[in-house]
Image 1 (tube, rainbow, N blue to C red):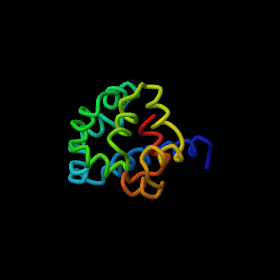
Image 2: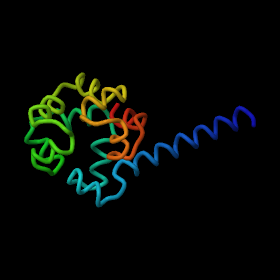
Image 3: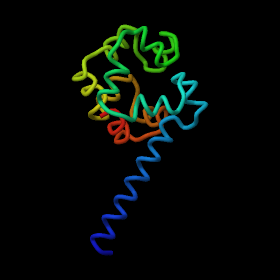
Length: 136
């Protein structure tokens, strides 16, 4: 196949992966509502946009974390494997911290969310590479 053909095929595969990541993240609208208390469009806005958007979503108090995810602090502890104090530290932080928490390696994802990379894939329906793309 020519180099232009290879380029087209790679671009097509990348686009397919991106589309799959968007839909796999929540699996279905019902499960997104149960896990995050928001609509699919809202999830796309919260997780699929820019660092500025991540900063707006996660750079507030624990009260706003509860409002954004539509769950009680007990639920947050169960879903993320952390105490409410940790939630405040992880989500109520500067953009630099958000980059550190969400933008890098799968090892860091495991530490932040308190579960293995296998369970990251199960809960979010994406590979560690997709997690990096979504939160960068």
